[in-house]
Image (cartoon, rainbow, N blue to C red; front, side, top):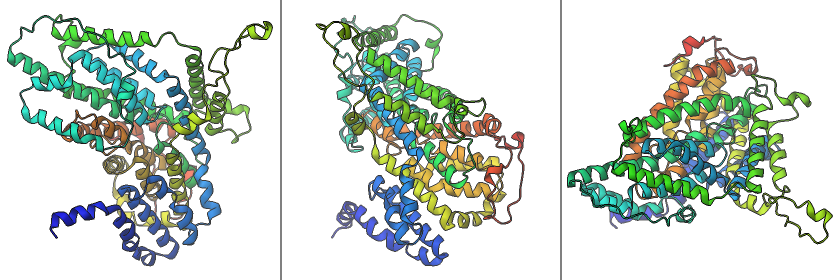
Length: 604
């Protein structure tokens, strides 16, 4: 049998081979370490391998602790199973239900078109508008849903600006580039099994007839140069949306799963730590999101031709006419939505109330409304569930008061803002199981002593200055998450990072905060995140486009996170000193207490 044929056959069954070989390959871990620590490490490595290779669905791998921890004598089932629905999961669930109600009534589309109509239609401003809109929506909706909704809007605007993409490619004489894009167009749909985008695009007004244009008097070289510029701008539009969605998800606790993993593992390892909640996280991460969005916009706009003198000076030329058409299309689409109806107004109200109540419950820097209740009883999960429960009975149409007094008046049909069937279909239950698997793993690492064992073997890393360690940790996780799910990445490495912080007597949040944010910064590969896959599956991007753009985005993200942690992060969470709530340092003998000043912590 030929080698190539054998390779193809092995690849066809590679997942089955991983499932069979991996448990046997790592079996020596059980005997090489102390009993409980070895068994726990065996399960952790097994799950990490299955998560990274996706030999099993992520949610199925997340359920392995339910059967493996009890049967191996690591943790009884009565301690494992409750980890799958902690209050953190309820907070995440409430955010997902709120997001499904926003999608149900199209409020996200209204927000997107309104922002785009405000920022203007010049390419750089439109890229900024796309990034602002995508990041804001991603704070509340899933990154995948945000990208799937924004890409058709971007394509519609681009077609108004530049016309048909295939005609644009034909104007470019660079045959190699055109052929490569054609190959991607043919094969990219195999990347990710997501609903096709045209269904969303059909909602936009694509039937606007353009007035006949006068003959183009430009030379062939000018036409070619302009077409290449337009093709670059087109790529910039498509690539900025998934990047902004990933950045925006870091701004709220419910925006992406790793943020909630941090909360759950903090409560497991450091029960006395109550510094991180919705409000305090938002106060830290939202300015970081804005900073990264701004520098990311500068980089993308510079790389793809959006930054030029047209931002400051108005010109009447071929581009100006195309921009006028795009602006007309955006305004027309927004007008077609009509005035805000009762349901959209109600959803807007509850959405704002949801955000305000979560933010003001206990923001730490001021007294929150939680002081009116028994201390420790009301959490962010309680607040979220209260608000989203109202959506299931609040009417979507304005009730008719006349019906109560006039027997001949017709009553308005009662339809709630959200039905359970819609919520059930919209909520990604697999992510909730994934969160639970992470919490169960963290609990086992703590109780088996594996976390302490790992910490004792991190002694060489104690020599690295904490400020440098922050950058190294963020860079490592940003690279690792290019090949693995960000949720799986933070589940695997957060316990190790916590032990490292205890070992060197640094505030655990000083390492855990940048690690959590950094694992969401996956920009270089199509397979890194579902949003990247969706943008790449459009067929208009090449891998080298994403690598070239994403590499610098990763560097900018690492620098922004380091700046945030060493400036306002130090002030907000007192990261310059070792806290009382991190007192269990007995497991790391020989750790010496050190106090870092913000100046010593500065890495930029």
